[in-house]
Length: 472
Image (cartoon, rainbow, N blue to C red; front, side, top):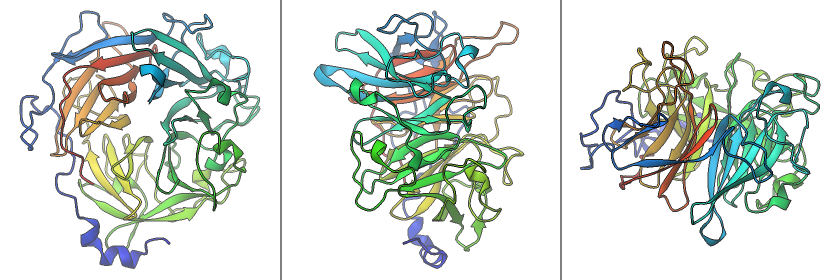
């Protein structure tokens, strides 16, 4: 049953419990300062990399696992380009399995290194995108093969409680548009441990067709939460409620009918019971909104995009809804930035926490507008995120100028973890690719991350320290 406005406003004090220690940004914070819990903030300053790839704190190191145009798949083709969302899974005999998205939009002829059309693993032979599976063996050997091909604009996604990867297409192209021969804008399941399970890929149409960004699954209820990176109007956070009697598991999603369950959009309201039309209205860390859910009229959206099927004032939107991560009994999700496209205040990044038991969203990270993105020390444009097994968030930057991986502690401080030093521009006009695919190995010892262009998957190790849990 939805939480009524009356219940939320009457219980606002209860909804705000746990709000102390809210996360916030602190551009230029000194790495040697304490984070308020007695722990040193961060891991120290970032040291320049002689190889010109990744600056890290003292004591940390990295290894290149795949590099587009340099490393090769088992089949002999070069590693595809444009690495994006990634998840890590525990394999047999000490193996780590990574599923790596390749965000390649449109037809194959546009790209020098598309995902190869591996036999039996192709959805649309005209499309350039897909996923590869990277196997990192105990001795350090690396192998890579195709998990799915013939999909488009595979941006982020999410891991499932049953050990598979959901890859998301960030596009709305129908067959006949941009060279496509099938409809796109769906979610597909990839099993890193069973190559046979990936044959004859089928979209999970029950999750809807729109510019998907990321997805998480509530292991308790089976609900799926999905973000949409779109504008004109701004995109939506979605909830998919499974049909009665459905049980998740390997291969079960492809058994769903196209209209199975309920796809819903959020309707948020403040403590006064007023509708919040856009998440950019929030300007204070710790802001809490109640959430109702409204059914989507036409989830396959062949005539009208899903986000345009709602009248103004009917739902709550968000600018560039990006990465998600399930932890602490709920879903952390990102709004990358907001400017004139949003009706509220300008910002350079928000992270929200959706609590399904309280039926609330809470603002946990807010980055002010970065006035000088070319200068190291401030952050903007958060994208992929993960919750660290050592405490706090790790956030991949996709903003302007200098690009970082940065952490956020529960006491309201941010600190640098890595800086991209691979200049893909010129000395006069430097350009640095976004970070993506940030996630930890199952044992928590290795942080994986991608440099999207040209496409490099990195494994980062170092003296990680345990930190306090995130507030909720």
